[in-house]
Structures are given as structure tokens and as C-alpha cells.
Image (tube, rainbow, N blue to C red; front, side):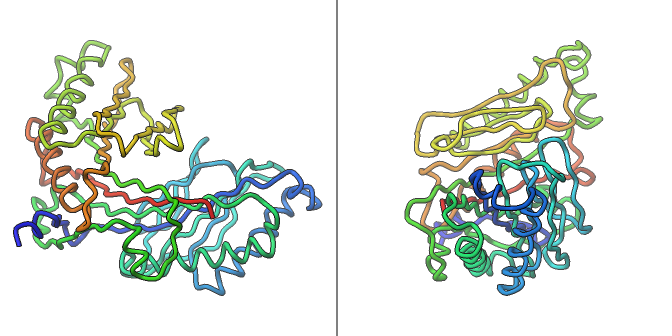
Length: 356
């Protein structure tokens, strides 16, 4: 019984779930030239896509033809924000629906991205069914529109977001999750995933550089160079990860948002908005990446902890998340954080991707 408990992580009942699939295709020049103009091309894809989505009851779907990376977050209001590099989608899966085309007129997008957002009450329980429906829509598009075109790259993203200090704010109820791996979960529900696929499982958390933190580290911040300040957090992070046997992670304090990738597919890369971080999850050697801008004090310090093959258990990733939580608590025990008034958002991510 103790072993079973060890593989469960107790997450507050007010945790928020997100599930979405992103299908990317890079059409050939011949595909684009088969239409009278680029805008007609996008509206034709949208028409075909949304008709298929109606058929398979997919109620919140977006077509992106603007070469921007979609980022999905839970919110009680439905809205989209655009930056130079990203498109942020905020929605509540329980209430919000949309079929929408996002493009820049006359702009030829390198990639066409189809974003399928899950809707309903229990996203984790219906995730395999949702994935299968998306596959059927892509089948339709490949036979009717994207004929003799490259394969789609299909990425399935699931996350659970919760406040680590929810208990201090009066949320005393929690639910024990095993957090099983996506591949066996989907196979058990007759959702076909190819044996050749890539999986990534990781957690992220952010520590706001609040008034309390600025006061606590006043002597390190008042130097117009923040190297010592960032080094304190980098050393604390490395030490806590080592204590709880977590070998793969990153700290990002350069104003960019961390994007986690498998090193077999992607290499480290960055711009002003996004910091792409690549990990080899099969390697046993420690991989801790630190990114900061010594001349800039950021609003939040972002941290990533990645599960490796040794963290993958048949029971699930519950034990891994318990180690992650212990790491965060150890780091925060030294910090001026008011648990009753400040949120510390933890996100548990599961990704599976393959060519379709």
C-alpha cells in the first residue's frame, strides 16, 4: 500500500486541466499555387477543416496561418492575444467554443497550424477519444485537400495547473493522481498511436520577483547587475534538484518563456520571447541549463524540471511530481513568500508527438 501511495501525488481539487492537439504541415509551393491567391487558400482550408470538425464534434478549433507558436492557458474569459512570435489562447474548456481562422492577408505562411482545443468537463478521462477524433479530421483533410503533401506533425499536449499553496488559502480537498504515461493510457482506450513516437513529461513553476523578494535580496539587486541575484536562485535550484534526485532542469530569467523540446528533434535556441530548451531524456548525466540576463531584472523566474526514463514508472509520474513538489518547497522555504496571498503556479505537462 505504501508503494501505491508513493506513486500518487495529491493535487488540489481546484486544479485546472488543459488538453489540446497541434497539427503542423509545411505545404509545398505547388499546393499554394493551385489557389487563385493566398487568402483563398486559407479560407478553403478553414472551410474544409471546420466542416470536418462539425462532423466529429470538435467545438473549439483554430487555423493559424501566421507562423506564430500557439500557447494555451486556462481562463474564465475566452480571448486571444498576439505577439511577434506567439499566439496566446485563453479559454475555459467547460464553456468556450470557437471555429476561427487567424491569418495575415496576402502573407504566405511557412507552416499551417491546426489547433484543436478539448472541451467538456473531464478532459483527462476523455483525452483518448478526443485524440482519435482529431486523427479522423486529419484523415479527411489528407484525402480531400492535402493530397500528396508532407505528413502532419501531430503534438498532443496535456497539462494540470495548480497553486502549490492552495491549502494555505483554504482549499483543503485534494485528489490523488497517478499521472499515467499517455502512450499506455491511449492504447488501453483503443486510440492508435504509432510505436515510433516522442514523449516528454515535465513540470514548470514560476517564482514572481515580488516586493518581498526584492526587499529580501536588496543588497544583491541594488548593484545594477543582477548576476549575484540570479546565481543565488541557480545554486538553490541545482542543490534542491540534486537533493531530490532530479537530474534534468532549467532556470530561465531572461524575459523569455521556456519551451521544452526533445534534443533528438530540437536544439537549444532562443529569441526575445521564447527560450527553447532541449533535453535528452534517455541520458543519465545531469542536464541543468541556466539562462539569465545580468542587466535585466525580470518579473518572474521560470523553472523547468524534466522527467527522464528513470522517472517513468508503470504506475505513472506521481512519484516524480512528489519529488518536484519537495524541490519547490525546499527552494521556497528560504524565500519571503506569503502563502496566504501569493500563488505559486505549478504545471504538470505531458506531450506525445509523431508524424501523421
